[in-house]
Image 1 (cartoon, rainbow, N blue to C red):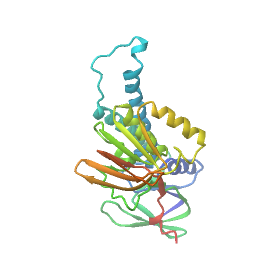
Image 2: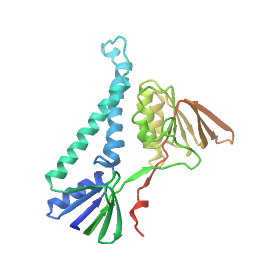
Image 3: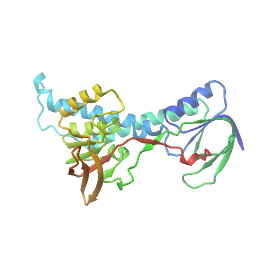
Image 4: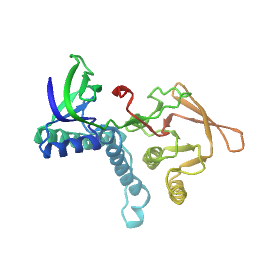
Length: 284
């Protein structure tokens, strides 16, 4: 059984940075990751890919709206979503490869599988693809397992038309009408991406303000700015359902006055927050 001074569960920005620092301080360090690539949500399906798409769509939006006033005239301006997604994937790969290099450079043992506690000094690693479960002994454990998209129990997400932020990062077409459930940071980022390339976008938010966990003045200003690129907002609306029929998604919600709102689109992004990854750790 391998023995370590520190074992880190999770390779996101919290986990891999902690592992590197432990190794730099001379501690024998292991890092457990259940997904094929390192970097966690942030590098693979979160912060980095979303910013890559925001960057690409900002270029397109500027070319479409402001270049002409600067004397730059473009003919037959088109958006190529395949190229945008491919570029985004390249940005992600470069970052992920960089973390893998840092693990080797700092002599950190990377163990692939799902980590859980046997007791406070022993961990079990169950492989995600074949192989046998292994155990290790460790003096200390850093839990950095991150989070996953929150699921609304009354909405069946097929991850094709009713999607999470993970799938929203890989739509290789401009949606005709993207309906976003949730007016937080994640939902508004994706709303911005697709509104900039010409999609009709509707955002349905339960509270009466965007980014409700932040200063109300920020939400008000953000609503004004995003409204300029055509995003429609339905604040104070309680979503009651989302169903799919072929390529059409229907979202229903209750308005502040108690009436029913019905929206039809070709994609529905459910972005109502994230929940911690802790269930499989056997913390009890």
